[in-house]
Image (cartoon, rainbow, N blue to C red; front, side, top):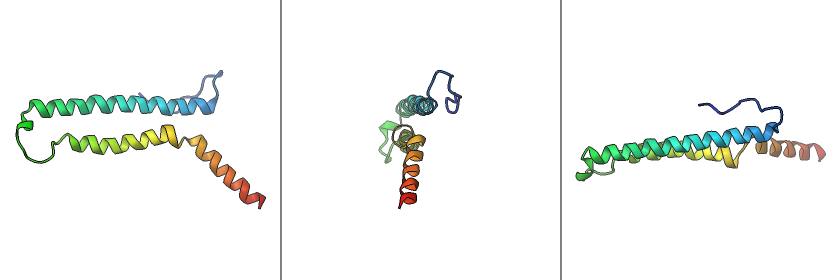
Length: 99
């Protein structure tokens, strides 16, 4: 399901709608991450690999790799929203023009 870039309903603020879509998309991504990685750990456990002492369990690698992507998705949805970045750049340009 792609929740990004759906046009806002006429009664909604377009900027808030965009941020809401980014945050909803992150929440779907987080839920998928948790379910799939839980499945990896269950598969690892029931395959009997937990009985051997051969270094790191293999589910650590997708957990970490995907977790990095999830972290950046969170940053985009909650920390660096498009509108806040545009606003910051606009203010910088406005200040340069005033000097």
